[in-house]
Image (cartoon, rainbow, N blue to C red; front, side, top):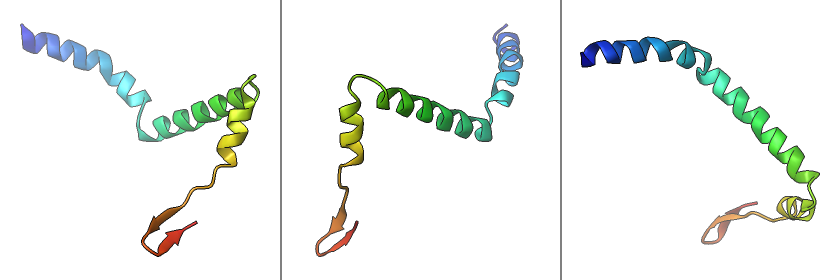
Length: 67
């Protein structure tokens, strides 16, 4: 009985996994990030969005650093 249920679930989810293959996931995440950034930049708290872009980031190890 469990093998039959597993097969049914697998057959049901196969088109979902085919739709969300690796290339599709990357595209969806990129569009989602753009929508979030657009909304955040035009929200009443847009100052925090600007502050994020004005933040300096430095990766350093001892005297060596990447700016």
